[in-house]
Image (cartoon, rainbow, N blue to C red; front, side):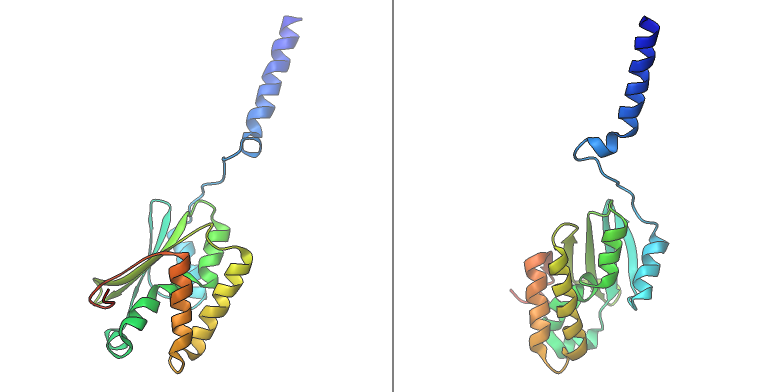
Length: 173
């Protein structure tokens, strides 16, 4: 009889442990992406930059044309990271790899001088807000040069939904 109880206890423990990730709150898939897979996603969406993981944060570094900064001033310096954050590529990465806690976009000039950075946390945007983000970005990319107001809208949206920092040389306080 005790052998039967012991066998039942072992079987029960095995079943419980096998389903632990579904039963225990807070346990989740922490899979992180291979960088070449992420690079392919961003490239498929026409975005080029250096990608790397800093812990669980995916960092996207992109060069910003110094001439663009000279002509566009602080508005162009501020809009830079949001052009890379609020993209279908970023959303795909966050949807595909639950271990990525945030995506950070950093714009640089001269390869080393940081112009701006913004970090979008995984849970910051709802589905509706993601659609709005993509809509705002699309308008900014389509008519931002002729209508700076749409760039300002993207900056405002970005500043409300990210942790951000700008170099005071480009964006005076």
